[in-house]
Structures are given as structure tokens and as C-alpha cells.
Length: 276
Image (tube, rainbow, N blue to C red; front, side):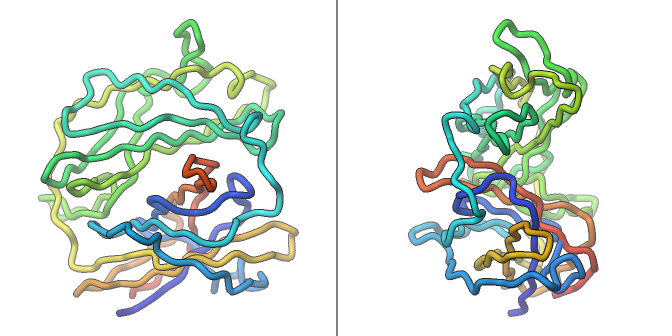
């Protein structure tokens, strides 16, 4: 069994536990890279959440120390939004949708929507079409537009054309729709969004698990010279084939608070390619 590390700086939300599907799909960002070489790591104790079994590669539920320095205020930095799935496929179940923001006054927003595959087979190419954010009157807000596509983040699978994709969910597996929209012109985005809408009705393609099986096994938090916090995730390959961690192919990790609700998300990054 080989191991590697990924890292991320500038957490999406502070005072949260990492877990429930923290993803290291096609692997990016690492503790040995220049950006993180001078960070001081705390040797945080973390582990896979007890009672949660791994059913696929590329995902894990990790529990451990708090990530971040400040206490977030859920009342002003997180809100539930309605999720409107048009033509929802019967094999998929959507959880509650949440928007979060970095401070109580910023209007840029981070989106998290859980998606669970309730079927007995693996589903790939899961995407939400005609994806948009709507205000209370049903009007689209700024970006995204009606032509945008939103992909679920889940397990890595091999498709029939031998390509790899991480837009798959194994039987019973939960993944996430994640997105971030920024506003630099004073547009009221976070404050006005009431509904996230998209079509989600297939057809989905079948996938085959690759020979390599990449599983996040723990995380550490640290302080970096620029004053920002960072998180480092350790990965193990428990499969029979090699896994390549490619540079700059971003992998989202969902941050949850002590109540299990989304408190933001961040990208795990690696700037140099390795094979484990």
C-alpha cells in the first residue's frame, strides 16, 4: 500500500470539521510542494468516521480537529436554499442545499448539495443541466446562466472508452454538487438566492472501478508563513494498480460542522505529478 499527501490553503469556512465525502479524486496539491513546504503542521489526530464503511474509491468520511482559526456564525454565514430538480432520475436522491460565505457581509457564495445513488449499480456522467440560481420570484441571479452544467463529484471510474471520470456514484454512495460564485460589483448574490434549479434525469453511463483505489485516510492542519491556515490530507492506494495524482486537476473537500451541516468547501491541490 502506497501513500501520498495533498494540501489546501485558505479554507472555505473556519471552525469546521472535515468529513462526509471529502474528496481526492484525480488528486491535486501537496505538502511537499513549494506552496506548503514552510507550513508548520500540528500532527492533528484524525481518522475515518466510526461506523462509516467505504464502498468506493476516491472518497472517505474523515473526523478530527477543527480546521480554521475563527468561529463561524451560522446565522449570518450559512443558509438553506430550495433545491429544484426537474425530471429527477428515480435512482438519485438529493439532500438539502446550503449556501455559505466567508464573512457576514460578503455576497460571494459557496454551494453544497448532497446527491445519493440509491440503485444497485454504478452511475456515471451525472450532471445537472440548465443550472441556475434563482431569487424568491424565480428570476435568475447574475451568473450562472441557464446554459451552465453542474457535475456531481464522486468516485473515479473507467468508462467504456477507457477514459477516467470522477462524476460517478457507486451503489449507495453519496457525492456532492459544489460551486462557488463570486461578485465583485456589489451584486447582492448570497442575500437574494432562494432556489438552486437544474435538470437531473440521465441518461447515465456505466462505469468500472479502476485497479487503483485511492482512499483519504486522515488529515492534518497547519499554519503557513502568510498567516493562513492549511489542511493536508493523507491518501493510500489500496488497490492493485497505480494511481497518478495529476497537477492542477482540482478536487473538492467538503467541510462539515459538529452538527454535520456544510460549512464550506475547499480544493485539495498538488502542483507536481506523482504516481503511487
